[in-house]
Length: 106
Image 1 (cartoon, helix red, strand yellow):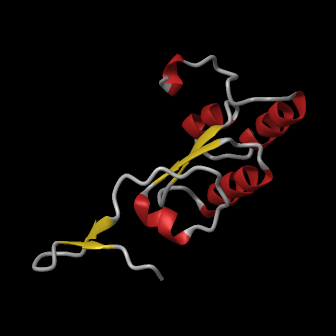
Image 2 (cartoon, rainbow, N blue to C red):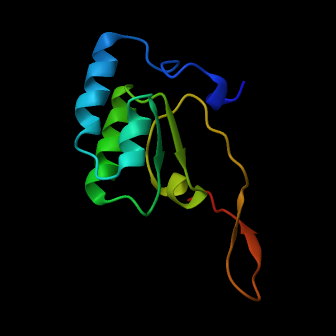
């Protein structure tokens, strides 16, 4: 089922979660992220401010955010405990002459 077809509160399971997300959403700097966070779904990428990134990470770790979408580059360096991770690819572009290479285990 696509997320867009789910009820807006599909990832909200209780009043405390919703209250926390609404309160924290007011601290975020972009309107699109504020609208997303109150549904329990967010994104995490390099364009976020340090403050927004920290808020998103804290909400996810605490279990208030149920779904987080991130770039492969950030997902390799961010330590966020998740039950399910979907990896689109295990390679990254290393530049002309090198092309695509597998991520290292480090």
